Image 1 (cartoon, rainbow, N blue to C red):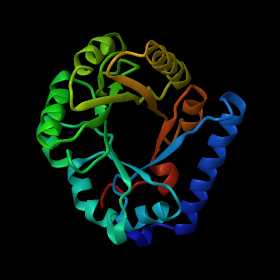
Image 2: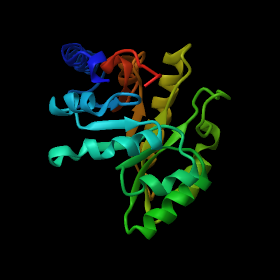
Image 3: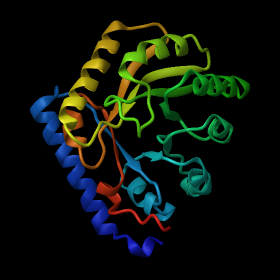
Image 4: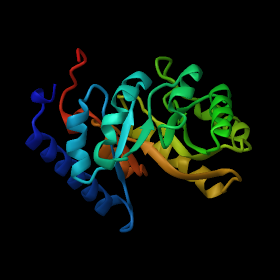
Length: 237
């Protein structure tokens, strides 16, 4: 499967992404801004994932639990132990499979899911970092809590002893994305400035291949990039 990928192309894509982020930070953000690049590895063969790991990129995002479980041992070859986040919609009955395998779950959008994560984290003597997924555009086709209901969700999750809310994640609508990216940046800044108990609010995961530069402009400090890094996906793999 790796034969369909070009090492040179992937490395060039990563270089361009880094340059674009640096340019946006120089123009719109403070000099000490740090933006982490997540490689979204849906359908990407593990050996190709290891190319970017070897280049210094250590954060990876998996959409599907089953696919991640099939890759996780390859991720750890030769003592490798990259950071892996679940970024896709997560069903409560799948939490048990990843509770000890990932560093963060970015797609928490309900009390029910948070309760199951908290229960299993406690049973495994750990604390799970999470992001609350916000459906900033109110799209019926997307998961995520509405911006209007976010406060209530945060209030219910914050007291859970084995969950640590680290921030917010979103996938804005493809049209008028600047408007929604701006709204999300403002929402994140407001919550961060409030300094609520049990909520650190230090990560805004926002921006993908088509809009990561704009997302950084509006405050994102974690961008999730798949096809912009690895090339067009082969969903038949």
